[in-house]
Length: 216
Image (cartoon, rainbow, N blue to C red; front, side, top):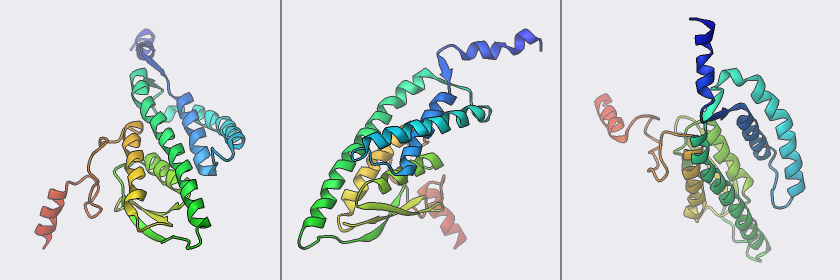
């Protein structure tokens, strides 16, 4: 192949595409906020400082390791995930505000209406970054804490101070998942049913039952 031919893919990349490493650097900075456990409402200036620190560290890392992933991505993909990303952050902030109010109300109540327990939450997201994002969102929301992740069952174990109302705990997690399925380009779609934890990943429930029947 001639030198001119070898440069053709570079020319084709520029049409409707943009470099990927800056976006990954920004994503690492956002992930840094979740890892640090910054409370966006109570400590806004600390959040800004931590985000800048995340950029200082994340952008060089993304640049150095840019050879390990596609150098560019389509702008249409960015337009597709941007509404989901904004909706995810908006929902997280709303849950943060309402959960703070709920926890404060329970603590100040003379009867202390808390019923702590650990519940299993099967997930539809499967990639490491998506699972980590969901798990950290749960932990950063007052009243809930992600205790463990079962990779075989693809499920989180969540400690909640009001575990009797399991639906109110799981419902925002499912909504986060709907957005995360789009943001992280997962194989399932928003609104898809929650898989059975007993079914191995990637296998349909029907196939799992047939396999179990054959083993017996």
